[in-house]
Length: 94
Image 1 (cartoon, rainbow, N blue to C red):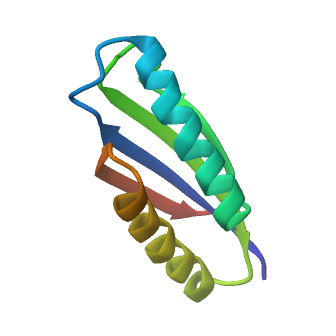
Image 2 (cartoon, helix red, strand yellow):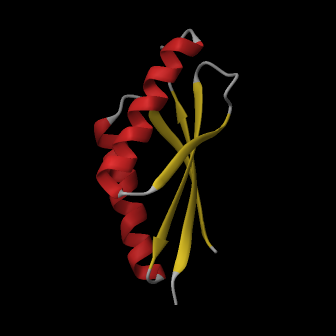
């Protein structure tokens, strides 16, 4: 039975000092996730904070094993490719 993997990701970017700088980081993360993993992704929290980025990700998966694999690949990609530090990951299946 198909399930939806829902993830909430929190990043820290201590060098960001304006919402304009933050928007650039968020845009890069979102486009990278969408392009690389074909997932739905959006900024979902902390929009008013300069140095904290909250991203939500949703993906349709065939089963939990595939979802867990996607989660591992996705978090590895984020840690490798982007400067903001990934500090928290919350994931659930619906």
